Length: 558
Image 1 (cartoon, rainbow, N blue to C red):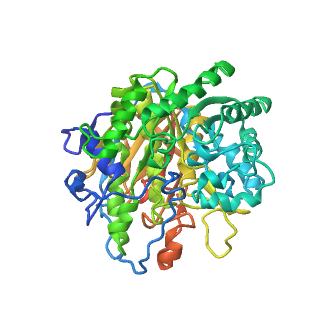
Image 2 (image 1 turned 180 degrees about the horizontal axis):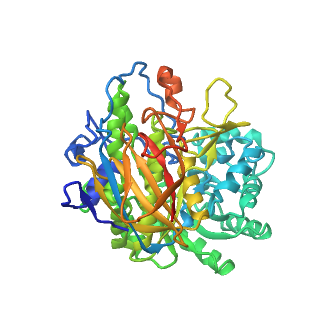
Image 3 (image 1 turned 30 degrees about the vertical axis):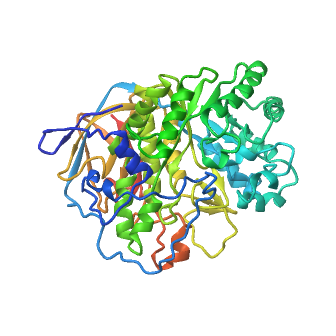
């Protein structure tokens, strides 16, 4: 849903529409020097530097990188706004749109690297979030998964040194991960998207997995025909897109005969600029052009990761510099990211269904598990909600990742650490900041909230790059909700206009003293322990949008 907004002086504020090449620079290869948060990011694309591979890719299966720097500069704030400045929100609750709860779905790659499903808190988390669907066995893992071995059934002759953390965890299991995964699905009756192993697996193995889920009364809502098989690491089996299409069709033919009711998905290449010059971009365009013409599948599968590791690399020992860069990189609402990327893929795939089976920011160790990461997750979810209203073909999105033994990706982590202070830890399960935006969206859906339009008057010098607000209203029009992400270091007064009588009844959210405030565990604990700072729950008496925060206000419409 694209909204009109206005500046304080009442002049219309045009929503800037960057092209895809710019978004590739911001979300795929952003680099940074010293940035001011209100500065136009289009001036900085010349500083782009190629970052590390996405989390879960064969080149970077865990994404856990540590900086070697030990000192930090944090003396000046990221951005100081006059506390008297006001954001005015004009809701239009006449027409509303249902929220697609299929966006509360999760990839489970790396989940079973710890004895995780027997922790009582996992049941609490799963029954609270009520995942619409879970992806099994994951991303990169799927290309080496076999159902007849312990854990993920990995074979050393196939992994050849890759997925070291997964291989290390295999002795924890006496049977296959699928049996452990099924327990989690049944905790909240979650559906499954199955990523079939067409690289090293067999059709019979894929059929066995589907038969098993059927016997367990676990609904499989989709089958992915491989995972990211355009990477060079797989070129011995898939030297080009035609090799992929041939193998995918072999699997598709049998799976459609056996399970005709289950949709099939084909691997889409990464998005590129309009006139790609680099070899990798050319390969991606050739891949998408070829797969887009085929008809053996029902949905296509992009993976979307915004890049922040390069911000950390170039920021050095200056957290302010790092997070100035991060605030430019992690701004999907400002760049209208989902819509721009969707328009790119439509040129190849038309109006076929899009299932984003992996999305997140990159696993920069200071950004992961921070309040700024939580803000990005909340903003991306809002961007998905709005894009899907205009484009219902955006059907599913799976956050990477549900849980694991690390902090870089998941909404919760398994940890034995007793020295680190955590915002919330029950048993061996620590809650990470990415958990909370999903909690808030689920709470809105549970209260019958639907998306409403709004017009926003921003204070001078501000727009939706600094603060994001989204309006929801209960289907009986008795409650108004305002979801917010504040990336600035100041509270922002929220004035709601056009509804005569409102009474604030609740506020849910987390906030930090700094954008790097965390839920308890990330790279700062190792490199810069003097800068560890825990997030806080927003007080129930809070009226303004707190600095460095994500959450929502609830109002009763009298």
